[in-house]
Length: 260
Image 1 (tube, rainbow, N blue to C red):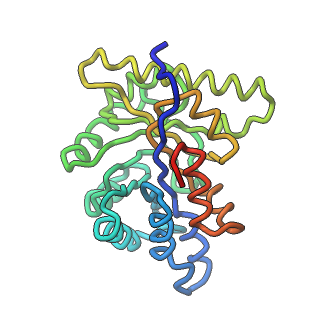
Image 2: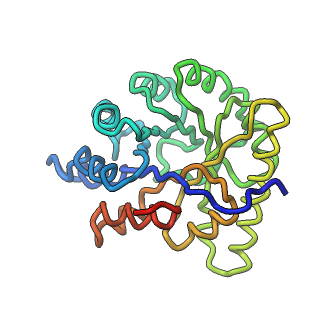
Image 3: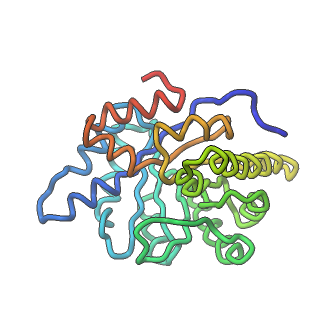
């Protein structure tokens, strides 16, 4: 294996879609999305993630410029990550708001959340020109990916700078053998991503997201010691209902190997 010896600190990007969803239930300006994003970044999070959907049921298109300004003006060390399916409207929205990273996901407008990675063999030809358009604008491209060792090479061919492991199948397991099996799939896919250094472009860096918690993150980080970033929204927001966002962020940062 080409696996690193010990976990390195993993960056935390907090998905604030759940905050926007709560705000949108009423015609009132609270919870204050920008104020909460500011508190999250002040607590030490390394970035903010949003997933604008066509119906704007949580993040609204109008939220993106305000979040982009917040990061650029007050937290220039942090990153802005926009997720979504690459319709022309989404592509233009990303280009208008210039995040540091775009994460492309293969979900349909009616889905409540993403539930699988790309089929790179089938979708790579569609994704490549989209990736080239983003990369020409200086935006890093990450693809939502299932744990499949055949995936990284195909993702690279489709223009990926990174892949984001869809960790739902891992997170939903409770039996130790099933957990181990899912971790093995992720571990083997990570090995395949690292092996791409032979193409002269460097290894395909790895992110992860979906149903990650303070309980299941340690084993994931041991399986992928060089995991670059995790995007966490639902579980961290649930914790914040009890702890407040700053303490919830610090709790995740400690699990991810940071002093907090």
